[in-house]
Length: 229
Image (cartoon, rainbow, N blue to C red):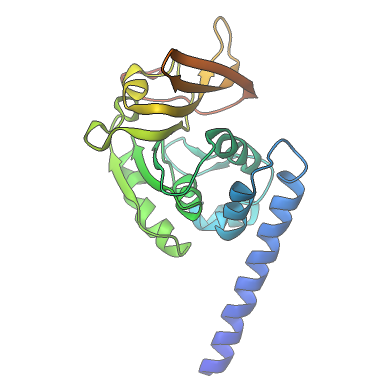
């Protein structure tokens, strides 16, 4: 195979990936509750398959979470879109993701023009994120391994904070690191049962406004403010 043939094969692969991603966004996101063009545009530009194990690439674009490693998952595409929509992301915002997993959401935030920071509990997952971002042709972002419930105080305050794992309650350090008028979105355990609710908290001069955005299912947060804390 000469150089021209290899280039044609690569172009064909990129075109198929683009077509598959478009189908995912069209079928799973557009027409549901997500309206943000910025969110939809980011989903179209970032290939989700770069953030899952090679053996799972064939199911990466399905309407469901995908297992990665360490008992963690990449969330369902629609749920990812819903959370990003709820964050009201704007270009240049400093955004912290707790539970960065494989780095998929960090890549989407970067594609939206934000300045993302990721904290991941599992060293194995955290170490893989730079390679995933490179494979997806996304910009490098700041990632650290540690207890996400403690946030990243050295880089605070953050305009937005996204928690990508279910917590018994929103960790107080995260609210402390949220900038004035900032928004935090997190799945929170519903009292007295196994259900979870996606919660948006907005920091205002008069206190914290809380909105519940509907039910969800996430793996549990680990660490001091998680189920294992």
